[in-house]
Structures are given as structure tokens and as C-alpha cells.
Amino acid sequence: MSTDNTTGASTETESKCGASEARSASESASSAERSSADRSSGQGPREDGNAASTASSSTGTTPDTGDDTASKCGASSSSASSSSSSSSSSCGASSSSDSDEEEVGATVDDFDAEPGQLIAVGLGPGQPEGMTARARSALMDAEHIVGYTTYVDLLPDEVTDAAEDIYNTPMCGEVSRTEEAIDRALAGNDVAIIGSGDPNVYALAGLALEIIESKGATATMLDFDVVPGVPAAQSCAARVGAPLVNDTVSISLSDHLTDMPTIESRLHAAAKEGFTITIYNPWSRKRRDNYEKCCEILLEHRDPETPVGVVHAAGREDEQVEIVELGELPELGETDLVDMTTTLLVGNEDTYVWDDRMVTPRGYETKYDY
Image (cartoon, rainbow, N blue to C red; front, side, top):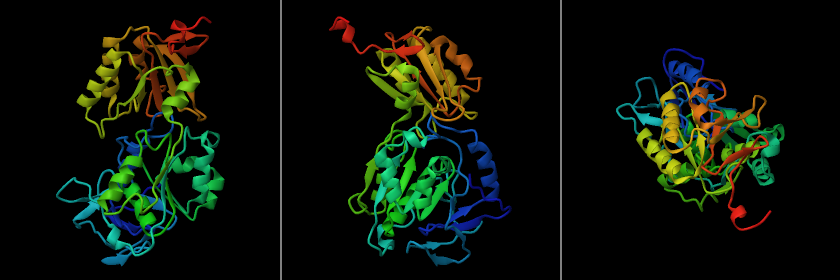
């Protein structure tokens, strides 16, 4: 994880795409401590986690003290100081000193080059063998790779060695690094923005399209494409048997982007209708109450003996897999088994455990004799 070790006034760095960002060293130090505890559901931290960002890093990042400089991507950017109106927000995006609203920097008109390509690539569970052949091929072809630091660390050496440049930011820098990826593509580079699991599951494919639109560009202009990966729900389900073979939903307990009343409403709706439920981002030091409330709602609608698969750090060296009863779930919130790397797979009224595997019947038994 990259951090800014300077102290005192904010320092400014310029990425290879030219979007200069002010970074407060004191914020960086405290953010790094916070982000170390926030991990995501079985495949690395999800993009909607609520830890604050620290300074970004790139092999091409250099200090910049000019008032108005041309970026390496061709877009001009105004430098910032500790008293500037543009500063780094808690999530790493540029924001006004008088407002918390995130602002997009350069627009399509600031770039003179023929646009390159932008691809959102899902890495799957994280280990190299869990990556699809298409994802590996897309990464090998990319000139620049942009991603969350933990995801970059998961890349095989052959991928990182082949890239011209790799740019990463810590947790919650998703807006700034997505814009960075887009700016690099607008400047004529072929860019891959990476994430664990699948780019369409609590990840950045949608955000990328929104920022492209806000810049006055188009997805077609950047030949925008999505390379899917295996989501945490599926990779974790495979470790406990067959819990999700019937109608199922996924719900994240992170209230960083979705307010808790909405999350609670969705939990009630899913639990009472008999869906199997995958719970992402179940617990962190900053929001223990969300986990406790989730358990309360599930037990309101389901039998305490309902099987629940608990998969911690799927595909990693510290992986742990247990099948417990729903009634045991609240007490697990105080153990190392449940954190931001954990995914919960909650069975429905038909789910049972056989031979240490969760089984949710699809309905074949009602149609066929076997």
C-alpha cells in the first residue's frame, strides 16, 4: 500500500494522466490505518467499502510545484496548495473546500490524442488460476493497468512485467482512480481498470461509464468493454457445496454508498420471500451495528437452524470455511472469522446440510424420481 510519508502541508503529485491531486500527509497516515482493517467479501475489498483513501502511487508519479502544468497525458492541471480551493477528499476524489461534492477534472476537450481503449477487467477470486483466460489476455494487452492496491498485488508477475505503467490507490479511491483510467485512455493509451470478482458486482464498470459521460466522451469513443470474472458469491458458494442453485440475491452491508434504512428494507424483502442471500461486506470496525442488525432481521424471518456458509478470505492462504446455523451468526461477529474478507451464504427454508455441504434444492425432486 502506498502512503505519503511527508508531514505538515499538503503535497501535490501528478499522475501520468495529468490529474494533479493534493494530498494531506496527516490524512494519509490516519487513512492507511483505517483502510488496513477494511477488506471485502472473499475476493479483496469491494469498491464500495467505507475506508478512507491515502495517496495514490504510480511508477510515473513525480512531484509538481508549478501553478499550471501540462500532464503527461496532454491535459493541463492546476496545482493545489494547502490553501487551494481544490483538495483531496476523504475518498481521494477532488472536491471544493466549501463542498463535499466530487468533481470531475479534465474533459474530453482537454485531450488532443486519438483515444485509446478502456477495459474493466474482473480478476475473479484473486489467485491467478481463478482468472479467466480472457481476463489474462486483456491484461497482457493493456499498456496501463489501474486498480486498488490490493488488487494490483494479486496480479501475476507476467502481467505486471508486461505493463508499461501501473497506477494504484488504496481503498475508497475508486472515483479518482477510475477517472485516472479514463484520462489515460482519452490520452491515447490502452488501459485496463481492474477489480476482484466481476466488474458489475459492487465494482467500477458503472462508475466508469458515468464518468465517461460526465467528461463529454462516449463509451464508443473509448471502445469501452467489460471482461467478466467470477464473483465472490459464486466462488464462495463453491466452497460450501451448492447453496445458490435456486433464486438468490446479493446484499452488501456497507452503508458507504447505500444508507442503512435501504439495506434493512432489502434484507427484510429478501428474507421473507425465501431467497438464498449472499451477504457482502458483513463487518468492519466502523460499522459493527450493521452486522448485528442484519442478523436480527434474518432471524425475524428465518428459522435459527437455517444453514449459513461462512467463507473467510476465499482463495487465500488464510482461507477459513465453516457451515453454521443462523442462530450462531450474531456471536461470530466478534471473531476473526467474520470481517471484510468474509462472504456469508444464507440458506432458505429448503436448504439443508449433507456430508458437510450446503444443498439448496432446485426443485428436480418434485418432477423426477432419482
